[in-house]
Image 1 (spheres, rainbow, N blue to C red):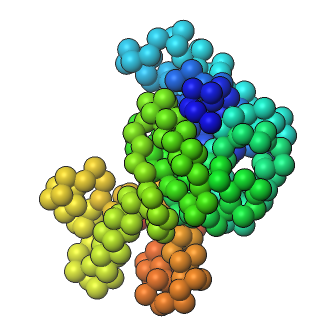
Image 2 (image 1 turned 120 degrees about the vertical axis):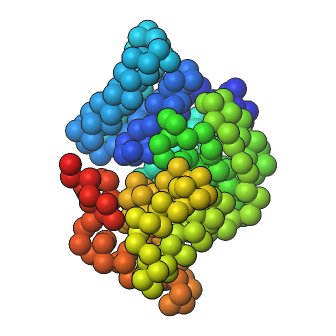
Length: 289
């Protein structure tokens, strides 16, 4: 399938990532179906999107007509059958648990037309862990966006063991069509490109913290002022969610059984307290005010 043959996209999951993926597609003229389990979740997602676009209108980066047209291109559905049955490309953005993703892909495989490409936005799981749940492993791919999707332009496109070259080409073309920049991984590696690099920095930052070398605030300041990073490692993990990193590390440990792959103690303690970052009002930093 060629990108210009893709007319309708379905996004499964209306959280922070899924809602903004849907909106970015709609802003570039695609017809979008956004699916989640309840109308409340979908309404919250669209209100967040509306807020993002209102700010663009206020800054003169978008006209009111363009905003209204983009919002109108997103149709919300609680029924996965209705959302996906006539789509050309599906992007899954559900909870980062491989069993959940496999279940979603198995359902999508039975719903979608035979030509439909099924993409996962997973930041950790290679699509080869998910594709066996379908009868179309050649049309399963990773399409990993970065948070916040409406600002971050990079998308990692990952070729799995059975992903076809045609699927990779169509996904790359679609990324460009929605005004994003693709990078292609020809092999699956845990964490892909960016997160592997970020993880190496993050683990060193935790080591410095736990060994009493410096406070997490000073480590962040060093990375921001010395390396010109927009956010230090602790601000970044607060932003993305401590549970996301914790779950990814535990998944890696479950396969390696190497104690070195266990989450750092400081991270584990935060997760056990429910201090997951900005989304809970507290992580390493306090966001309650």
